[in-house]
Image (tube, rainbow, N blue to C red; front, top):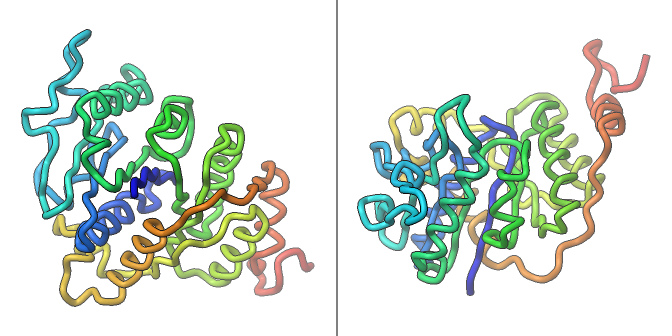
Length: 276
């Protein structure tokens, strides 16, 4: 079994939380996992390594490419390896191109053949072709979109769906990061049906996740976090067993999405959305 999975979603929605904890759960089950941070912030691996990793792009040396032998690939847990693609300094260069260079280096070094699962934690929204590199270049065969029921998050999720529809990507599901506001569960369920993408798992709102990460710790490694760990383990199991062709997806245009949210949510006056 070879799984190549990319996580997309609005910046700050919790993709790294999902990526790290899901990778840990897969590794505990005996699967060999490579976690690839595809963000110039280089923050995907910090919960595992406790210190910044040198990124692949930092070692890039022109035509010869980067060497992957000098601490660029960390092995912080049994069966789990991780790295940071890196990118240019803020305001300089193209982050998407950096992702492409890094993934090409990993491929040439044979890393994709050494592991059972490659999990990509991809920068924010799909704002340029470079950020879709894991999909367009065939490095990722399946993708999941992390979202909450907040308007900005749903707009990002819908925008990603529209972009991936044009690429013919295999969208497996939504990962629902609960923000715990009135009507959120129903909104996500209705959005899922409308765009025809199933909810793969609900990650319940948790103060424990936030507290663990403030101490550079993954919540699934906290012995008291049984509920949270079970959610990530369920997601890992789903990702590992999902197969077959995906269903057709139906992203909305901006007008449709705005109307959809208004109709689904209670009004500020306490009535049903759309009522006067």
